[in-house]
Image (cartoon, rainbow, N blue to C red; front, side, top):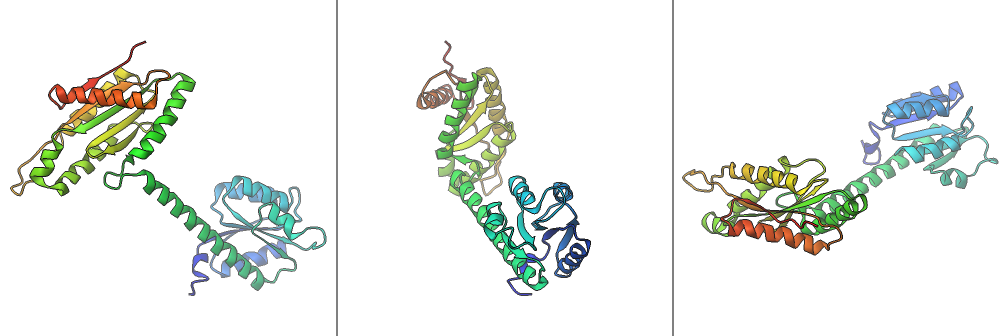
Length: 311
């Protein structure tokens, strides 16, 4: 089968026409072309079918009982990701521009030649596929732009963007917001002893461990090197300390085998915890978390330290 028709197989087509003979003839032709086809005699029935079935393209007559085909097209484009081909036998009453302004992808006149309709349907489906591929690619590129390539956590650039959003939200609704900053203890020595490939394995696993300790509303970021940050919305300082301790304990329980002899090795993290103070700058908030983490380092590492500003 040629490249032009390949994307068509498996497409779901809904035919809307109140003329039984036309509707059934189109239904048979569309099925013979390799599509799954549905039919409806009214716009209301069509909308109900679309609520319960995946549809790629609707082919609809303009003249329908109740809601007409142009109104149906308008509703479809407002509520569904579906393309529409409009048909009419009243060429003087409705224009191509009017159908397109409602969101139709194409416009054909009755009596419809099935071969012509099929060419138009193939074109609409091809453009639909290309549009979906473009959207998928843009989403992928955006995901790559905000994601750390190694750990698959969000990156530091995205961290500051999201932190500002959460600060705006917590200020507007006067809700608590906490921040964790953690650092792998003696990570330079680990890399020196076992190599950067083994160090990367630790970073990857640490990202996975962190995610298992968080709620859906929480978000984790690779801040840089062996440092990670975690934003905890709707979370007071005491609750954040509990989360931090859970992460610290989970990391310490992880076993790595970077040595040729299979000898087990563990790593630990030092964690700083702080809670947002009303109207403070983003940099001040982050610096306080960093200072709390540094206190954990100075106190012997593998521990959680908290630094809060009480009004």
